[in-house]
Amino acid sequence: MIAPWHVAGLCSASMALPVAAQDSYPPLEILLSSPETVIGQPYAYPDGDAKITAAIVTMEPGQSTGWHLHQVPLFGYVLEGELTVDYGKDGTRTYVAGDSLIEAFETLHNGTNSGSVPMRLLAVFAGAEGVANTLTEAQSDDAQ
Image 1 (tube, one colour):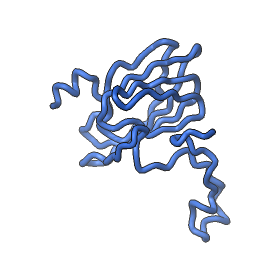
Image 2 (cartoon, one colour):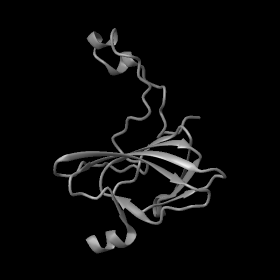
Image 3 (cartoon, rainbow, N blue to C red):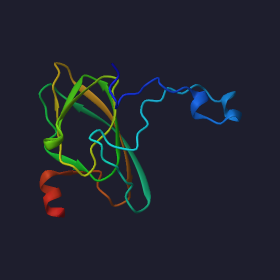
Image 4 (tube, rainbow, N blue to C red):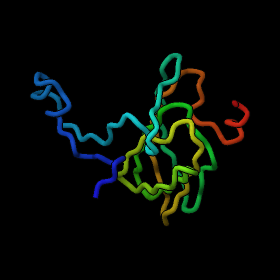
């Protein structure tokens, strides 16, 4: 069964591009297309000059991120390993290599490498100049 946050391969280029582009553009494998986060929240882009940040997060087995939140939309793609994220009242979800997600927005959560090998996640933040992509729990308390 394909998880709702992982829709890889369900869309072809002919469904995603205008007819004129279908003959020349390579086929696409859509990893994810969603108007909401993994916990069903709408998200919004921050005000200001747009800034895209891409990073690879690497966590050793048992390592946790600590409670934090994201002030900007975040697309994640698990490259290797397994990541379990505790969303508090919104439950826990486990992601494995090949899973895509739009991470919880402005909601505290804590990720843990729940596997036996290093976990690597490609994180792409759709942010803005002067807006932090991620705040720790203490920083989020100070901001309120």
